[in-house]
Image 1 (cartoon, rainbow, N blue to C red):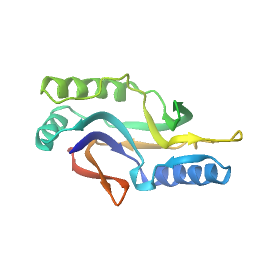
Image 2 (cartoon, rainbow, N blue to C red):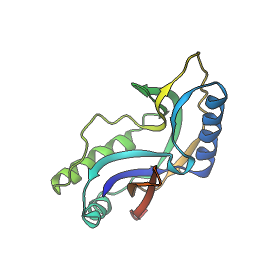
Image 3 (cartoon, helix red, strand yellow):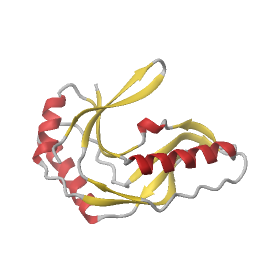
Image 4 (spheres, helix red, strand yellow):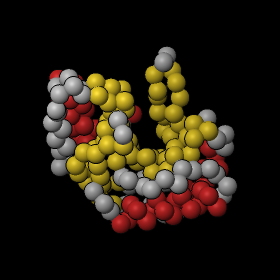
Length: 166
């Protein structure tokens, strides 16, 4: 199964980002829009791995530091558009510790530089300039969740397998 560890977004942030996506559609921006229920912030991408219990144990072994998650400006990786999350030392330290614990347990995990973000559109293209105003919202992040990505009826569906204890 395809696994990753993420922070789920508050309904307020989710709703605001969906409004941003609707606005981008009205401006003619094309691409694979992330459905509202799939909006999240990935902390560690594991990929294909068939022992979610082992991953859950690692998540529970790394204390989660409650922190404020604040949206910031937009950014992109190639043709992937995202909403940024303000730099936060507690978050960066947690991700570093989490990834180190996964590696120590022999669980494969992406080691790419951590850039806190929420993916909005993949394979984005725009014929004309567009405006994306990321709302200045924040929430309290209280836990990380183990999530599974699967294909259902040609669509990607994310499901929380087991949240870590807050």
